[in-house]
Image (tube, rainbow, N blue to C red):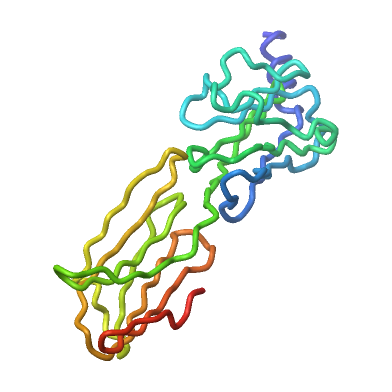
Amino acid sequence: HSYLVFLYLCFAFSEKFQVIGPPNAVFALVGEDVTLPASMSPALNAQGFDVRWTRNDFFKPVLLYQNSEIITKNQIEAYKGRTSLFTEELVNGNVSLRLQDVRVSDDGLYKCFVYSGQWEEDVSVEHLVGSRVDGVGLKVSWPKQTRLECSSEKWSSRPQVTWRDMNGVDVMSQSTLTVQRGNEGLLGVSSVIPIKWEFNVFSCLMRSNTTRPAYQSKMGIYGEWFFYLLLL
C-alpha cells in the first residue's frame, strides 16, 4: 500500500503543463525554412523531457528528442538533416520544430508530444506549403479554332480558375482545364476557352487555397488583333 501511495503522490504533485501551438496554420513557400511553434505552459525546463514531433506514425517521428539528445534511429528518412529544435530555448519551455528546405510533401498536420516522466501533453500544428508561382500568362492559338489559353507553373496545390468576359460574366463552363505535375512535385495549370474575333476583354484568375494573393491576367480581343492589357 505504501508503494501505491508513493506513486500516487508522485503523480499528484508532479507539475502539470499544457503544450500550446499557434492559433492558425503555419505557411511557408517551397525552399524556405519554417518554424512550427510549440511551447509549454507554464514555461518549464524541457531539457530533460521527451519531445516528439510526428505526422501519421507515432513510432516514425519527424524528430525525437530523448535523453537530452536527438534520436535519428526511426526518424522518417525525408526529414533527416532537415529538422531541429531550439535546444538553447528548451530551458524556457520552447519545443518548436525548425524545418529546413520546405518541400511540397511537408504540407499537412503535425503533432508535438511532450513527456516529463509523469505527465504527457500534445498539440497539433497545421503546416501549409505554397510555391513561388510563375505569373499567369495568356496566349491566342488558331487556326482550327481560335482559343485563349491561360497557363501558370509551380503551384503546390490545384488552384481555383475563373474566366470572365468584359461584362463580368463567368465563362468558365466553356473552358478545358489541364493539370500536370512536374519533376519537383509542383503543378502546371492550363485553362483554354474558345473565343470569337470580336471586341471583348477576357480575364483569367488563378487563386490558391492558401492566404497568398491571387494571380490574374487580362487580354483584349479586337477584330484580327490582340494584345496584353494587364499582367499582375
